[in-house]
Length: 269
Image (cartoon, rainbow, N blue to C red):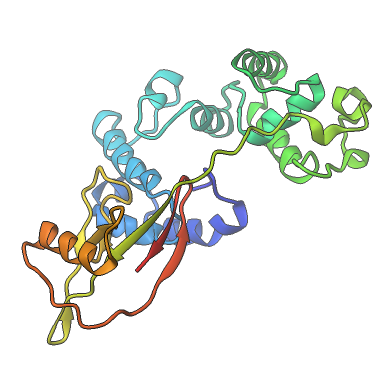
């Protein structure tokens, strides 16, 4: 839940989740639709689908016991180097250094690194791996991440409160927020989307998205992208015919909503 999401946002979701699903087995036995509903509002739904699949694997292959070695834990769906290092260090006391955005920024400033090239990222990882204590690796990782989240922030870092400023190369330049250099932002594509609410008596039609699609397993009104040069009405008729096999009679327009995802934005009609 904490991937790409702040702690204050996660806490109420986490508490509700634990109350509903107190064990790995309870997640594995649950219907995907039910766990997606519990996740609703957190976004990045692939995390939820991966966790649901991983829970099934843990129950089937590992008798419900989460593996505590890098190879097996990393083989679970949705587990990358960051998640593996965080979980294995915090939950199992294994000395793997976490490389999240906060840790990269803290170490970039300490080492005086401006550009996060693959070589420099390797250098940061090697430095962290050399200094992480074997007995309390989880505390170390959480300390570095917390330092980056609260003091060593991207803009206007609180260097006067930082316990590591004495050995920080970026601090000595008097321009710590120049480290590391922010990556050039790519322009997000924008799409125009249409959807129809198909009514019959007191019910309306919704359909479930394919599990491997974006927002897989969630429910939606039929519709899709408006093609270049296409009117909203023509696009809606085309999409509903493609998805439902009928040509709708459009009665009225309800309105439009702008929404941004991580990699693109939409205007939803």
